[in-house]
Length: 441
Image 1 (spheres, rainbow, N blue to C red):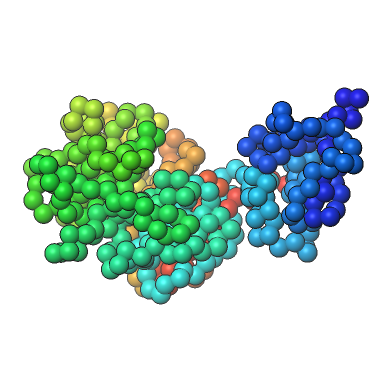
Image 2 (cartoon, rainbow, N blue to C red):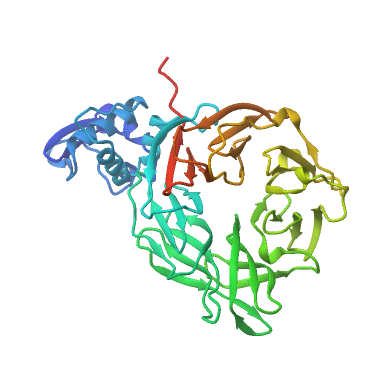
């Protein structure tokens, strides 16, 4: 009797399927199958109580087999995008992704495909989305792609140059842009990733007045705060803080004399210390500034710059920086693509350059791009001309390199979930790198 009550029958597009509640439970409670366990459902399995779903029966067979075995087998007659859309309907897209692609590992990444962007010329930034999609900034435009790499309506800032982009969630994107002189616009806005509609703007108030400003680098904290470097016309230079739910300004860190927080190239929120890493890098400034800001005490708790220090030219021109909280250090990369490390526990400010972490030199493109850094799942990534190097272990030893034979220099890259996106300098071409699932033993 118990086994009988466990059986569930479906009529999907006119084809009958029979399974068990145990199999359906593998989909999770947030899936459409999770509703079967709701108390309003009757699990008695008789012909009059078939559950009808007006969807593709061939895709349902693949979905059901995935829930039974944990393995994904897609017949040749089923387009992958069709299966992805059906999996999205059933609420098990994450199951499909985890079955198709293994856990993210920089040393096992394989080129999945390349996409030519919707606008000609050079892209400026690419950001991976939380659902496996991405967005690409180009001039005043941002092109958004979902996990299936279908392009949504582009976001047009009406001739305002995009400085940075960031995902609030899979449905909302924050864009920072330059102010147009004399127009009073610019700053930041929250946009729908699916429709491109502007939902609201983030304002800066100074001395009870709304100010025009240029927004630069963005960062986000787990408690729903947005941080942005801000450059205004009078005294509103520094780092602004907004509530991402309401869009209201909740704080502002005004830059001290001789520092350039309002022109920062990179912000990074550090969860362990509740501080914000702020980096102003070459060539925006001849000298590099890196600092940690504590908004609770309204003070700078750590800083480094090369003013007055006896650095060589090679050491001074830092192109990117990233904090690594587990090792209490900051990794920097210079214009010659050498990795260096700063100790957050020391205020001496000396850089320890690592010869063992020297990047592998690929073919020098005609128009090389500045190197970029990223940290993901305990692995360190650095772009270098037309490739990306992967470093692992406590000494950050070079372990592999990602490279494609065409597309030009990599001007930006981003990692999100199970994908790495690399944006090339030619015609907005970007690559998608994924980790194949391990073979069946």
